Length: 332
Image (cartoon, rainbow, N blue to C red; front, side, top):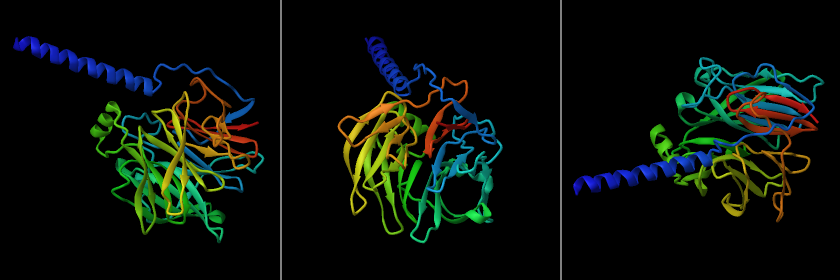
């Protein structure tokens, strides 16, 4: 009788494990086949060989790339080279990516940049916010961009208990930002367990020098984040739920969910077309309307790009970055 009970419990446990594994494969879109959709005037960006996880473009056409992200379990084409920040001037006739020099005193050897965001202050000072994972830990680095020297002056490193697993960031002030945590836990084993069990414990945090607080929660895996051109709404990508959440921003910086847009793809970083307000991960037009229009501008089956994470547009120029592979420049 005891053996029968034991076998029954084992069978139930194996069935539950199998169901969780199948559910995780579905959330990861592991069996999805991608049909390529090409653009006519595209080429790979020279100098980006090991990932360009996030891209942010200033109104003057200067594009910043975070490159060389290393993550536990993630393949790297340059495992011994630290990450960096590259810049490309999209107003140039033949733009090329240049690595920005970072000021002395900053630990370049452990630089492991992830999500990035720029903020232009009232005096035209440009700040670059960078999610950093030195030794696979979590910090937010704030730099001042010095355009004449093509360099970054490191100003501040931010750590906080409410930022245990930061993925992406949107700056809303010179030392103020919203950030997504893509896991609730910081321990690697608990991170895997959290995803396996589909706990929906990830969140969005607002940070300022005077206040740090959780402002949205209950995501499967909160990932990309951005803000509408009128600064009234925050957009959050839930990558494993295949959703974009639209949240209203209030004067006290709290967020209230307005709607959820369901998509049939993994949703990573979000960019905004400054001329139209369209959200780019696919192209999502009129996201605040009852029926947004969703179209695919570019897709590749892995022959050109592998693991795309971001698409940013400026004046009919499209930049596409990847988690660990190359980056693409297109004119359309």
